[in-house]
Length: 138
Image 1 (cartoon, one colour):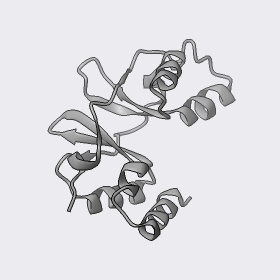
Image 2 (cartoon, helix red, strand yellow):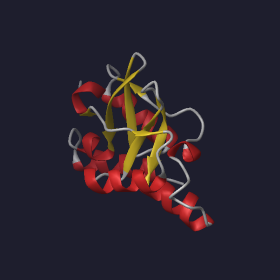
Image 3 (spheres, rainbow, N blue to C red):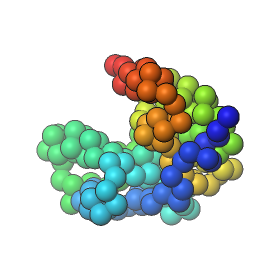
């Protein structure tokens, strides 16, 4: 059985807590991703930032993405998985917390990100469909 370390995209690029949402959006554009981990000055994971967060929680609320920081959208303790946890555990966590991207931690270090697409490559089409539906339930 595959473990998180086998499936993850390694060495994710972090947006720092103090960087603006405009900077984060440009990073997403340049990296062609829809989400970035938010890391503190200690390089520890503080949260996840999505392109949707920027639009819904800043722009739609009249916020200024030139001054709002990534930290302003980091809410609560980030949902993570251990690098040696199983694919089944990753799926359970994604479904339970309804997240499409799951940071992978080894000790206290962020070592990767598992996305729905990463998981789908390891499953049958039917399993993938069920999993996507369960993660996307409201």
